[in-house]
Length: 576
Image (cartoon, rainbow, N blue to C red; front, side, top):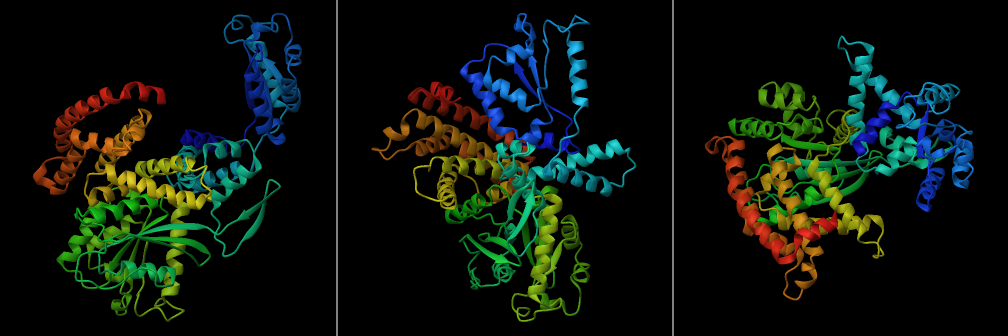
């Protein structure tokens, strides 16, 4: 729905000649009157100046004129009055065959179009901004296309980009902005422009004061232990917040997130737990990885892959190749920057010259649009100027991220959007809690983390694969998550949550029991294990198909038993 609203906005970017409000001739009950009142409340004067009321079912006028019918309802009369008295009537069923007179659709449509010609074109700040984006996209397109074809292609690009910019904007706000609702227009224009300012700034949009806040950036650090991932987080934030203690054991398990204002932006840095390429099945590591995933919802401004400057042995080259394989989806790399650490080891080389000796490294950076920077967490902290200054390099890094977000929007996928939906749903249930919105969100994320942890019976690698939009991992994790949510909701509706409390068995535990007993979780784990095994497992499609046949049969049996026990079928039907 949101995608289609955005598409309509983009289509209207040049301006709108007329809005038609379509209403029906007939008896106006309190319900119909309420709808008219909502229209009066929602539509502002500037929109109503470009609006025509079009009545359908004209045959039901029964000898009345449309003007006489309008006078029978005060709200209807007010609405037509605010539209400058512009109203027409048609009948899509009975007036098609007549070519003349008032009971002819042909005559009425001709009159309608003549009414529209009297008006100028409607636009607002949002539509103008979208038109600027379309024109900019057309300039970039060097293909030998007709102007109309270039425009259609540009609109598709703007639609995709705008959709990623408005991840956190509600459908109601989108529609409000379309209709010129002042605050909604301000919110949407700010979402599009994402101005880079180092202080609070006041602007005027459509006569409304817009308080432009400091732009926010959510950054996720990825990399191998020992390459300076946590130290890089400290360098970006300008203070020691992430643990950088050396350890002989494998990767750190703890996930950590920190927010700070840096170079005029509110930066959130998420330091992922351990090696992001790990196969570790440790429950603590899995829990922290899921916590990281939930924190990334609904989207991420930038992934930063941390690599070390130094001699690239076959082992390091293999690591880069793994990165290329993991990020095979170019959609993810459009939102990725490579950050090299240990810059002091360049020894007079530029970072581009350093990469020339490693074709895999060059390929990775190229797939990231050439976006790469270099820092030295140990030796470049004191210098304030020049290329060997962390301050300068971090400033350049953040500017690269700003440009990347401007061009590509923020990164999201089906899993992150689903998690955001669950977070919003949990927040709705907290109306009685005396918490501000931020506290409600943090509490909701804890609940979602707990629920997600119960239903995911896969390796840490699979969860991270879903975050990075690896198609098979997304399908697997989403399938289990959706089924768990459906079962939990149904069990709660059936009263299992309440009845099971005394026995220590809630709806969530029951849902998990059905999934495990039915073989869903085990099959997902088996599929991922086979997937990780590579060639020995055969094609991924074959693995999934073979596992799904047995899994679905067992799972369906368990689901039916649960249905019989709690009357889930009728309960689920009631929910819809």
